[in-house]
Length: 268
Image 1: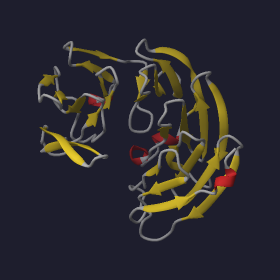
Image 2: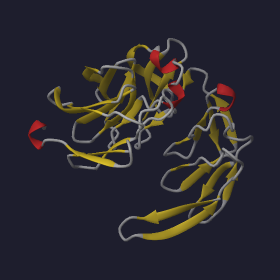
Image 3: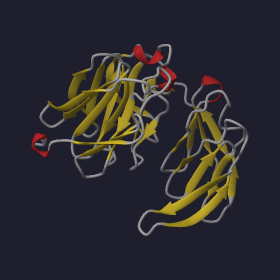
Image 4: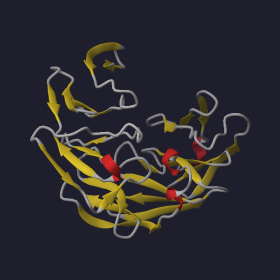
């Protein structure tokens, strides 16, 4: 199997790398210079491979590893959190951290990480790479361990890395990272299944009953809502949510790709 690296403007392919093609393990993450697959790092510019001491993934998990800006891989073999550093041929367990949703998130400036504390079950903000706790960003979480929690997308980071949102049960919270503070708390009719956060202050949430809502984080006002129904609803299917950068358009994969336009006057 190959991973292709392409530019958008102009639209052209600049690299193609062969990755591990073991069934169910064709899952990759990428940063500016490397691609992480089940066997380690690939420098997509040269094709050079940096293997890890053991496989990064387990077939049954199908979980995306986190490839950090400093070229380390955070992953979850045997339901443990492990940090691989293929460039320096090291690995270590991160005993105080677990996945929040499907992965641990590291901000693009490589200064902060967001995940779940194994000590108290709370969403936690760490200073990365020191892994020093800055604070907790929710009450103790229970809903993310439900029957179909592995399909949920309960953590969203704004593209600029300045804010993040986390959902649990029918609630969601938006936090500013620096200074660390709560900016918004909202409710949904049913359990949060997916979130998206934009640079310009939009929060979008879908829930397990097909409700879809958008808030203006700056004012706390509800910008719009809709309910999906029909064959697209499935307890093991979570529609993706994504904002078009620096615009008032939101994309969702419910029933194909649907684009919503948010009223501009709702912006502060």
